[in-house]
Length: 523
Image (cartoon, rainbow, N blue to C red):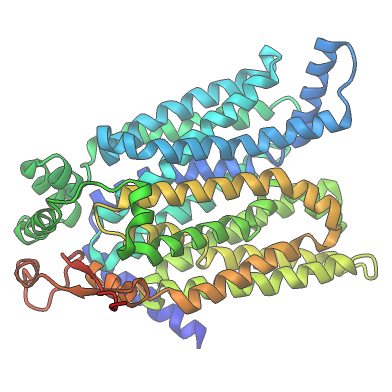
């Protein structure tokens, strides 16, 4: 039974948490607070003050040009304000590789907070300055901040986590995205900051999580894998391992990273172009592109950006919509937490496939209910339940696992390029949804969600056919799962295997492997 599986997963996680250290939890919590939380907050924060922002745009336009702005002009300005966030995210994803090379994982997260603080000032002071350009620029800058953090944080969490807890720690990224969405909705209530005179405080709050991260993260270690492989600093790497793992003897962990480093000494960090040209990771990169595209195009961000309008179409009274919207953020957070508890028990692949399939069913039901909303007084409530089910389905797997997979499907030399590609796809798709969904909704009316329905079905089918399960697998085992599809044969380096097998019965989180293309038949 699903409930029995959930309870077994919870017990399993509770047992594994005996190895959790304060240092590891602090890095996960405060790393996600200044990164994932900010991203989630910005997904929902523009929803509640939308009418106030549009009114401010109109007043500003009237003051400048002595005539009210046309409806098309306001719609365009509003669409740019919403979608420019994704353009900034795309820029952030593309500069991440350079930043982590210079500053490291933790250093990049810390430096990134300056963007959040600058953005908070621009967004909060734009109204007083009478400049809607400041709001648009501020949204772009916070987009850059989110683009960097969504690439760096999963990489950092994956590299500091023990192998058997990589999924659970990685889900902190998803949980804090959901918390950010929830707090964006909470603060947007009319009683708090959603009032005409207080909406600028919604954006000023962006500086708070950035400052909190700046107060804690400097006292936590850098990624030990980065210190050892990139910086060749064994002393700091040893201290970092001791802090994160909670034990004094970390010689086995150091030797494992040394072995991987020796195996990759002749390999430079790959560029995105080299990643696409490398036959040995062909299906890994295709899988990440598909998963990240489906992550955005499955339609959840359309719900976050335009929740109020969707609920108005469903027949809810305007005064009740902010409180109804708040429940969606709560459901999302609960679903993400449950997913984090069971991921190491259930696995990545089942959660992803279940999430996309359930979303497809719920979008279909939502379309039906929206078409018949005028027939019965209780029909809007079924639409509301369908939206809650869509959100819960998304957070059960598709909401966080794509970021975990990006780190798991690639070895150290490919990982920065893989995150750059994944980030590019993620933000381009995000921009497309934010910019085009209002026009799709206007053209298709209540059938707009069937577009996302098709995306969810495609994602589920692809993952069922292609994706192997990565739960508790070493990098070698994951690579072997893709070897046949990539048409390469693998010969493990026996010397490296012996070096990596540091303890009897202990699985290594990474291993060396040689990719040998299969010989082509003679003509």
